[in-house]
Image 1 (spheres, one colour):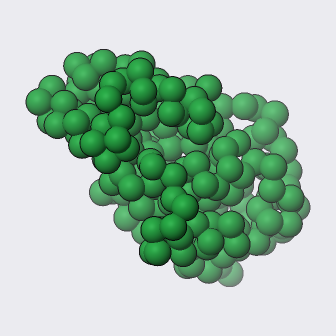
Image 2 (cartoon, rainbow, N blue to C red):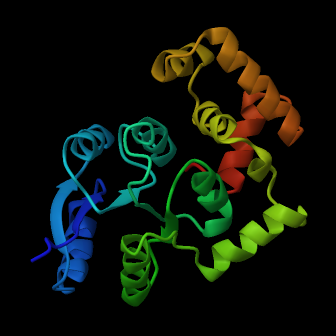
Length: 212
């Protein structure tokens, strides 16, 4: 008999994890084999245990979803990872798919949509909602895209950290890069977004719901 697919839920809110776990466990052919409340815990469990799918919060207390994707992909390049977020698709979805996410789902999705998304991942496919499909189509033709969608994966990662108030030195230490490299990325981000300062980045991020 084949073992049931094992699913990991990584979110810092215990009540949310419990709700998702209850929803998934109602599908008797799945096994919710574990939970994680921090980014470090999620990374440790993803690296040391076998999972058939991971549901990952975009914003854990110690790491962002894009940080976790960058760190886990070299070790688990084919692990299906569904990003769960409170933010609408247009704010993060395309950048996170570029970073290696297998799908993107907002936390206000109906339960049936969560089930469909997980089944899609377990079948070996990416989960692309209608909203994300429209964004990807816009990403091809370039019409009506938000400024941050033009950023590369690493540029977007550094943009988010700068916008949240982190210094170049702090980002360099966190990402194991040189100050010069981070400064170069900062310059690229400002140029691509036609902005002049970190304060502009923060204002843009708050206005567009990328940070709170």
